[in-house]
Length: 208
Image (cartoon, rainbow, N blue to C red):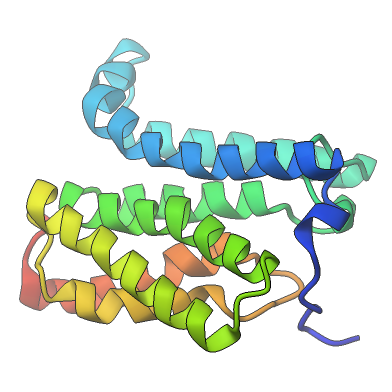
């Protein structure tokens, strides 16, 4: 069996049809609020339960993975999921793992905001372009520009180095592109750019 999957219309595979698809997109875009919650309330929440912020992040990841394990064991999908996710780790679980790793390994606004916003907005942007039949070369071009602008915005608001937009716009698009059977692009879109940022960090010296 191939390790790659065929590119299909996501609406056809979504539990709930178009309504499920829109719900899934809404959840994806809603991930943009996660950095705000983390940086504004993460410390207070951790203090309230007598834990450190990384411990809370790890607990959330473990809880989601445990719930995902139970779901897979029972073999069901919920509203908005794709039918094939009944037998494989869901995009939601992969996304939660990727976002969690961002907070564990790069817990600074200059990195976390652009990485997570690129996933929250970039992935649906590319998916909807494809669904509307946009030519592949144009999907790549528009998406590189769109995600690069996210990084430019993060330079303005969170002091992310501006030149990273030139690199990470195309990199995030490339990280989303492979249609792998067992690893969702919600993971690759965070973990691959995160890996490069960690390699560059000794030179950037942003994480305190």
